[in-house]
Length: 116
Image (cartoon, rainbow, N blue to C red; front, side, top):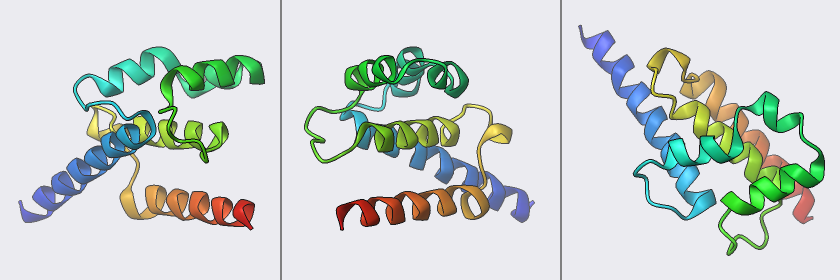
């Protein structure tokens, strides 16, 4: 039972991390945040099927305008990671150590290289 409890706690942590990521990018309250972002952004396949101009328009309607240094592509990555992590179905959430942390490190490294 303890192992199941630890797994459940980890999945709750992943979900909370997802909501926090969404909040950081959108500057919105957590209530209905996942639903609101998903309704504007859509799934990743539909989003990637749009032109770059359409993608940027969608992102501008979601991303906190005070994030001046944030590139819209980075914001999209953070939003989609936030959506994955906060999936209501625990079984669809990524693994924190194997999936989430490497993506965060990759985003961090990418941002560092762009800044110089």
